[in-house]
Image (tube, rainbow, N blue to C red; front, side, top):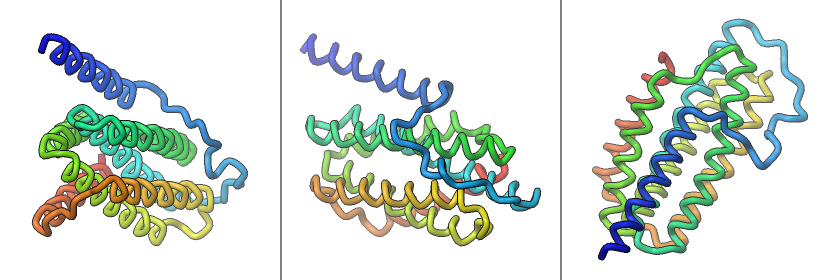
Length: 213
């Protein structure tokens, strides 16, 4: 029992460290940035502001994803699922790096509310994990599905000339779809309609807040 408690404490400390690095450290990408070889277009001030705001939303979404994965990994009961969660979290860290770099290039900033969103998402991840791995993975799969829908809507709103931002979002879409497929392959349960609806409402509130702040 003593060793089990110590293991839990060690896991919590590790996830707390992940949270600090997500919020305070500059993220790095192992893969080349998707827009690396694409020249920046001559965007108007209005277009840059719009693109930066959309990428700020995406950046906040990746902060939330990191928190969800950390919370879920903390309470997951199976090592293979924990490994899959951590692998996905690594790719979300790369998304953070891509979004943060692009936001800077557009003259924008990341959301001031990221610490609040991280804490709330981490808590949701812990709760989801506590229901068991099937529901844990079901929550993950639905989250990735909704993120993919958000990214598609952002492609419609971006200036056509902004190919750099488009390249980043397109690669993020591919990664999020892969994470959803992985969750399903590991045995994700289908969430009740009411849970999906609630997740959509919370996501809309987060999106509106991150767009402005």
